[in-house]
Image (cartoon, rainbow, N blue to C red):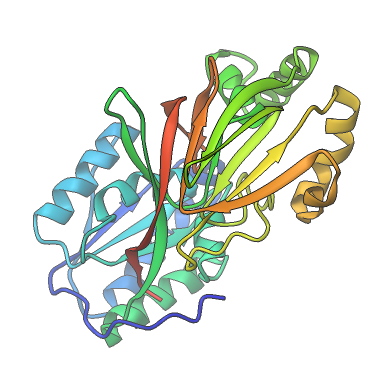
Amino acid sequence: MLAVTAHDHVPSGPVAVLANPTAGRGRHAGLLPAVLDRLAAAGRPVELLAAATPAQAEAACHAAVTGGAGALVAVGGDGTVHRALQAVAGTEVPFGPVPAGTGNDFAVETGFPADPLAAAEVIATALREGRSRPVDLARMTNPDGGDRWYGAVLAAGFDAIVNERANRMRRPRGPRRYDLAILVELARLRPRRYVLRLDGEEHRVDAVLVAVGNCASYGGGMRICPAADPTDGLLDVVVGGEFDRRTLIRVKPRIYRGTHVDHPLVRSYRARTVEVAAEGITTYADGERSLDLPVRISAVPAAVRLLR
């Protein structure tokens, strides 16, 4: 699926590294020195970027790329990758994700080992050999001038609403807050009216789940768009229709296997350009709070070069 042509040139310059020590609830924090050692074995200077907030992380990545970095590496989960992609998308600067988060969907779906040190070895070898491989990204815009890239999946339905609820809650701390947000939003569950335009063709649907995938999975292995391929120049759209609470609870575990798409209330589509409109929904891309609907999403072929 990822058998794409390797590129035999990696720009000279230091390897900039964005690391999130709190990724994966800190379980890989002690691995960073070993990751940096493996990257340094490629024979390039390695520069650790300083950032205390997500906004600072994104700004640091942009500064590194415009300042002459030869490559950018993100050590963390999908959120860390998401910040880094904003800087490398559409440039010649190659990128390497070291999966060290709770959700590592983009790294795993694009062929990197799930083990952080093994992934760092793959990246170092690609750097040493001057090799990178192109994959697609999704680019989304909204009428307010918002413009974001993402690598894995955009959630614009129940999962986005739950994330928004959890982010507004102050307690409980940790994963229990997300569990409570699910219970609250399940109690309020109702289909919403969406207007989708897929390569210009309009679909009006009442749905509780809408996902637009460049890759197949989100949320740490939930295969919401199981047929998505980040090298085919297309986006996969999965719509879960008028589910009631009981049916949604029953179907949701099937998302890990990708078999939810066989349910009669689920529809799947494929398009180069996807427009999604609905009232009162903030989208989540790569698990990160993103743009309010409506949004326009385009598949951008070979938008980033990966060090693998």
